Image (cartoon, rainbow, N blue to C red; front, side, top):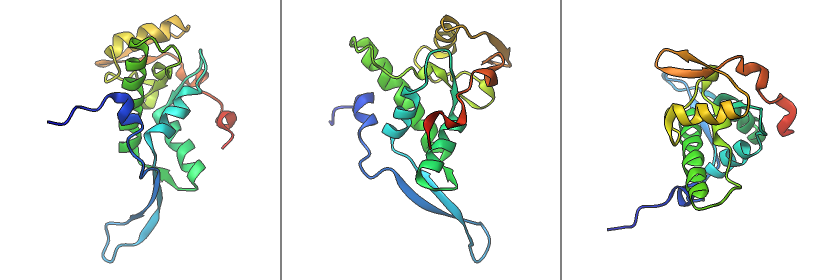
Amino acid sequence: MAKKKSWREKLHGNPELPKIQATYSDTEPPRLMGWMVIPSPMEVFEIMSQVPSGKLITAQEIRRILARRHGAGSACPMTTGIFVNIAAQASEEALAEGDRDAVPYWRTLKTGGLLNEKYPGGLQEQSRRLEDEGHQMVSRGKSLAVVDYEDSLLDEDFFNV
């Protein structure tokens, strides 16, 4: 049986990415709708690693940055979301082994400022880390969100895309 890959191995395990893919309409005949980038996990990790303390970014903003970098109309929401989670898990794996330079994944929110229940430690741990950096949380159904998260989002020009 093959050994299960670590999160950090998964972070580096897609040499075929990034790639640009055409998107087509559901009509007959299909029409070219545009171009979408499927990012690499390391690209997502790199963006997340640049978010300074006190600032926030959303997965949606990461997708916009990736699309601009690659000259595409969009970035794949599914793979970007998966790679956000891989970056978080890989960072927690690194922190557990004493690497203090791991990506501050807790600063990456879901759409609408929602916390990510799939992060290590769930909503409670992400909330604790964000509160330690001065953010306040509010309940949103079964989830939590950062109060006035828009005020802490990085400026669009921060990444010089």
